[in-house]
Amino acid sequence: MGEVLTAVNEINKAGPSAQTYARTFKNLGDQLMVAPVASKAGTETTRLRALRASTSRTS
Image (cartoon, rainbow, N blue to C red; front, side):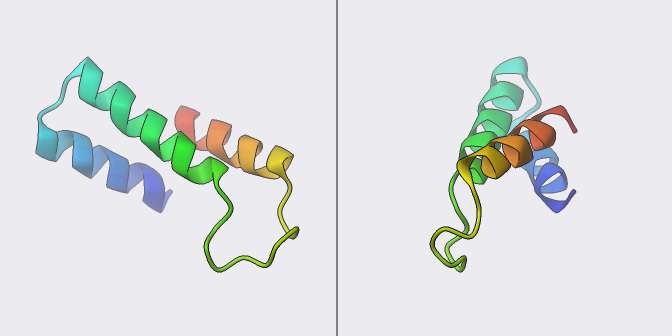
């Protein structure tokens, strides 16, 4: 939820447009596909990251 609110704030700050909206949420999805920096190696699967990213894009 926090990621989505941050994305909305970024969109509003940049000036709402379809391009800003698409770019911001694509970047968010790409960011969520990467394992968190503090995570231990092998504790989160690629499938889980993909699910997390796709869920955030539709929220």
